[in-house]
Structures are given as C-alpha cells and as structure tokens.
Length: 331
Ligand SMILES: Cc1cc2nc3c(=O)[nH]c(=O)nc-3n(C[C@H](O)[C@H](O)[C@H](O)COP(=O)(O)O)c2cc1C
Image 1: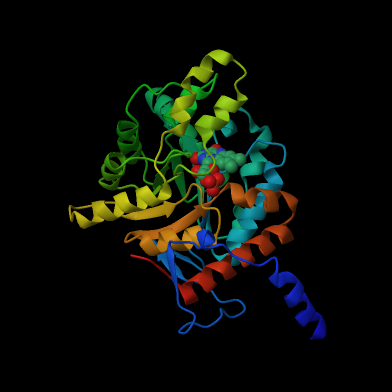
Image 2: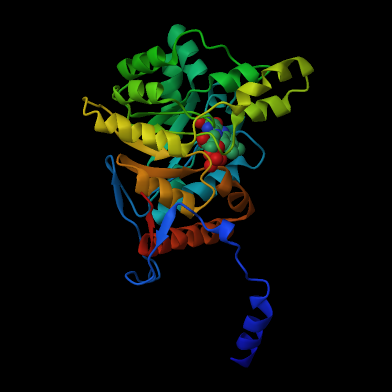
C-alpha cells in the first residue's frame, strides 16, 4: 500500500494530460456503466453468422515465408473467439502448389467463416479465358465459405509487374455473381472507395463490402516503395488519394437513408483501425450492419505465437467492452 502511494506521488509529476490530448470523438460517462466481466462477449449476428465479437480478420498472407504459422494462428483465433477470416490472395495456388499448406486452415478455424481472396484483374482474366474452374478449385482447396475480391487498380498500376484492368470492376463483379453461387465480398486494399462506388456495390447481391479504407496499410504506396525504378515515382501523388473509414461509414449511412432498394447493406469496416477505440467509434457511427476488420495490427502477434495473438486480442476486446460501458460518440 505504502509503495503504491509512493508511486502515485512520483508518477503524478509525469501524468499531466494537456487539454489538447482529449479525444474529441467521445462523451465519457463514468456513472452508469460497469466493468466488463472475465470472458464477456459482444455478440453480433452478421449475415448468416454469429460472432462473439464484431471482428473480422482481414485478408493478409499466403505464400510468404511465415505465412503458414500466421494463418494457422489467425484461424485458431477465429475459432476460439467466433470470428471470421479472409485469406490473403490465393492466386498462387493455381500457379504453384508449393504454398498450399499456407491456405489450408479449415481444420484450425473449424466452422467459422473462412473466405478465399482474389484480385479483380485475376478474376477478369480467368473469366475472359473461360477458366472459372480455377476459381472453383481455389474454393475447394481452401474449403472456403465464400470469396473476397479485392479491387485494387491503383496498386496494380504502381506495381512494376502489375496486371492491367481491362473491364470495369463493376462489370466483372456482376459477371462473378452470375457465374458462381458462393457468397462474394468486395474490398479495396488501403484507399477505400467513394460514395458512388459504394452505392453501385450496395445495389448488387454481394455478401458484404469491406472498406480497406485509407489511413492504414496502403498497397499503392507499398508497391511504390518496392519499385526501384525512378520513373514510376511520378505516380506517387495517387498514394495520397482515398477515403477514410469515417468517410465511408458516412457514405454508407447516407446510402441507407436514401431508402432505395439495397441488395447489400453489410459492411466490414477496415483500413486504419489502430485500436478498439477507433473500432468502437466507427461501429457506433454506423447504421449499417457492421463488424470491423483488422489486418496489420494482428500481424506481429500472429507471427510471434498463438499466445501473443490471444493476449493482444483479449486486451483489445476488453478495451472495446470498456468503451461500450463508458463512452458514447458525440453527435
Ligand atoms: C501483409 C499484408 C498482406 C495483405 N494482403 C492482402 C491480400 O492478399 N488481399 C487483400 O484483399 N488484402 C490484403 N491486405 C490488405 C488488408 O486486408 C487490409 O485491407 C489493409 O491492410 C488495411 O487494413 P489495416 O490498416 O488494418 O492493415 C494485406 C495487408 C497486409 C498488412
């Protein structure tokens, strides 16, 4: 006790918070809420799935050196906490089977939702060549419940060896929906998308839209950094273009309020979610059925060990539940 009181005196000098540090997004009410209990969940029904927490593990890796361990740990997390997960791009399963084990995580994730992932350019090319069987093969190898298609024209353009988009992605998505009966989620990869794009997608029977918003990992920038050729650096200003998760939530709310018939009004809010507090903010703002997606934040603990990942995740969920008890978004 005496020690603790000494600490308080010592640390009080270092614990001054300048007014400018106050997070302007929330009202804090300490008098109505209680602390979350051990093991408390935040149940959501998202589409046909029941989750214990409103979290999606966003598409990341496969075919990289540590991909197998990362994917297995992420899949275990989804099973233990009833979450859903997207695999990283599965294109390489067709070119080369060496990395097959990286993508075969069904036994780790059990019956929780697992989605394969492909880029729009690849889908376009395979549909054009009559290679729908490649996509079915990927679904079967990965035992996926559905497919996430990432729409990434800026990334492809910035990438020295990138593919070219030869048909509007919207048309390709429509053709995908006609060709396959498994659920399809559409996402960006770090630049988000406009109201107009979101509205067009909401009018299709896609399972969900994942933001991949601006403000987190940005794949156009990432490709630029990989590229040693000076000449492509001329496109660098494109890396600063995009829509944040906040803007995209507002766009989706607006689309919903317009009361036109929507086929899809389910979202995964992702891209730049740095912590539970950002997530809580966006989830509270959204009028659409929402969960949130995390990618890069999970990478380091997933690479380290399952225990590190579990620890990181449970602390994040405690933060989310504490937010729910004591914070409301300022209108
Ligand atoms: C290492 C890494 C690999 C990724 N690979 C893919 C991919 O193959 N397909 C995809 O759709 N998105 C991919 N992404 C993008 C993420 O799914 C997500 O949209 C983006 O990273 C923004 O989320 P974050 O800010 O939480 O990282 C990748 C992200 C990371 C960090």
